[in-house]
Length: 285
Image (tube, rainbow, N blue to C red; front, side, top):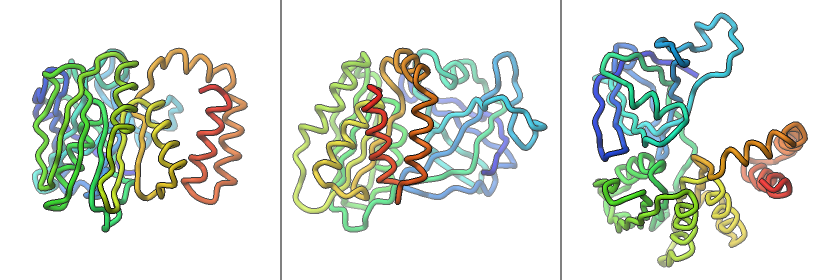
């Protein structure tokens, strides 16, 4: 993993709660990025009361857990040494408080980019559903569609002011759904998936947002026999996270052992994720 130090150049409000932070600097000239469909990187944040970000190569063996989160690489211009990262502002967490207080000139650390999803070349259509936390990824993926590729997009936002213009060379059918509470967002995500009428031909499903909803949709797709290379379902956040954390802490050691055994025994990523889902379901998580 490579680390890049830069500085905040610009902060733009795309909507009342979505901020685009442009970072740059000499270290970002020639930034290694994948150009991948779901390109993302880690962003590392300073600890409370500090301004400099500590990274492993400079930490002298520090064992403090990193303050890092994964975000979509929304735009990358290696020649100019610039990278754009979009942040959806919410209560709590690490990133939102930092973004609210960020100013041009503030230090910024990100890693090289990665990607996991590979959309089959023969996919005739795409289906995207996600809440505000997933809109940066959806926006990037729409921009990278081939001209004329059909895509249906369901964007779930807390109010109409959070709707964005999402450009694409594809043939995009974009719908917005307003849902403000965690329970409403979960329900809207599941309903959007269940109500989608699949077009003829081979397609691709992409789901991002609340973790329980993403797991449920992944399970439904697997049960329906949809090949794993035809979908991606990713949890970005969790409703009732405090209760989930409390229950996990009570049985975490046992779960960690089961997860480690499942990872070792799995023949591939999909079989591991299937077993991971069963482990969590058995534990009521």
